[in-house]
Image 1 (tube, rainbow, N blue to C red):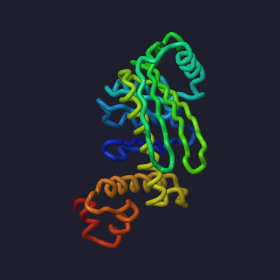
Image 2: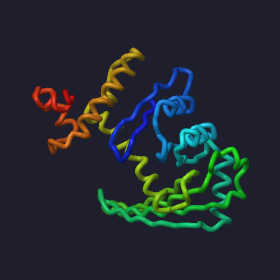
Image 3: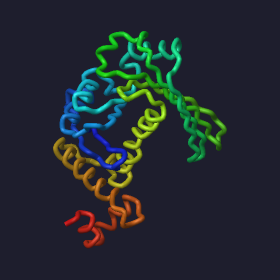
Image 4: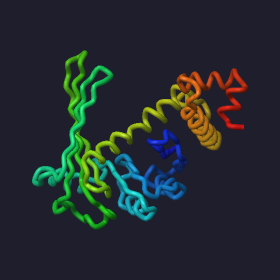
Amino acid sequence: MVSAWAHKNNLSLGQVKIGDKSNEITAIPKLLDVLAIKGCIVTIDAMGCQAEIAEKIIEKQADYILAVKGNQGSLEQGILDTIKFSQPVDVYEDLDFGHGRIETRICSVYTDFSHLENVNKWKNLNCIVKIDSPRYIKESKIEQRETLLYISSVNPCAKTLEKNIRAHWAIENSLHWLLDVAFNEDDSMKTNPNAVQNFSIINRIALNLLSNDKSKKRSVKGKRLDAGWDNDYLIKILKI
């Protein structure tokens, strides 16, 4: 399943099943077709870093931030050359203290495309983004480092880009993790393709309703139990 997640609304917007002889590259455009994304910033991991996907996002009057890895070899090398031989036009640094670690996120933005091949194939390309993330684990006293690369049609503002890139990972914590913990989706024994897809849709609808209910200070799993035990609360959640 390929899912779309609205970070600010804490809402699963839709999903598309990947065909047996297909992959995310063909499923993402189908999902974009059914979404109203005008004025939005769409973030996609490296699998979705495709010129056709970037063009579709622009056609729908939205902007993109696409992760770049080895699947776009010449693009990745061109970005590395840009970082090596060019100066960033904007830099933003953010510190995060929590979960037993200290993480620094340094966002550097570049607008020199002279080192990129076939730059025109990336519709409305505005900037190259590099995120450096040194992370210090307090308990083990180990320092880890990670560097992430992106291309984007967003205006080259390092703070805006860093915030949106960081928000991308909310889909892991607020959707995929909760579907596993609250709905035991990873342990599902269903094998019929239609059943898998239908129950996945139902789980996401239920998650949307439970996550956005503010009447109880309970976890999603706790609210789900309450809805099973209390018909009044169930009716309130379903808004009927």
